[in-house]
Image 1: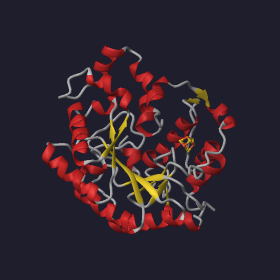
Image 2 (image 1 turned 90 degrees about the horizontal axis):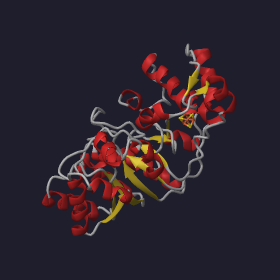
Image 3 (image 1 turned 120 degrees about the vertical axis):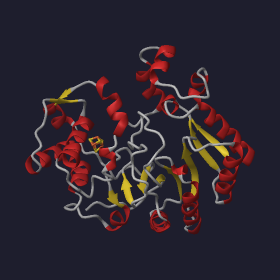
Length: 325
Ligand code: SF4
């Protein structure tokens, strides 16, 4: 049985759609995703379950959660109704148009119990969002009295060396800061190497023989992350560091059926070796000679199931994670 009895801190994902397609996005968000947004009913269900499990505050992320500023207000009302505090809302500032409209939106968020915006400050976002929008949004927050959680301040000076009115490619960053600029970022940023981040950095990873991975990789313990889990707009529990894998939160509370969620269960209990065994036996998966580590093997199998065989498996959700990478 797959069961969650206690959760401490996490986030909700109101939407996967985003204005940008950043190279480091572990959720593989982009403008291509469907226009789905969390409904108030789903939010009510999630918040009431989380409260019962001991979690009384969450952050809100996406995608870009403020792509639809009016839709987030219903989610904030639901949080208040269920006694759930909002730690912060993550945003990339792309929606900023002018001071008056931003101040209106921010004041409305504040009236709905939001105290802090986490604003993305990094070269990945700067490929899509001019730095001027970030600076203007920081100023608008201060005007309204909202706290800013800058993620991350240490990139500010580097981004600020380039024209703030336009976007900048990694070629420009490389010319300014050196050929290994992209490679130096993970240590500075604390990247989760999954989704599109994995695709970006895979060419630089060391290859390992398939047999070695099968021998050495242990269980992935997908339900052990009590401190940075996510629940998405479809009510799915997303493990701390492995998007693209999901089990409905409401089923995990009573104990989800391991036969229904075999991919998740195999990874949780037996790791990628368990998944590979299942995929070779039942899904015609043929392993390659080597992979860039256990998560490369894991993604190769999951891509085979979702994209190669076109299967609609309940624990490999949302399928956009695979389609829009
Ligand atoms: S092998 Fe798969 S489930 Fe395990 S940590 Fe890597 S991506 Fe996550």
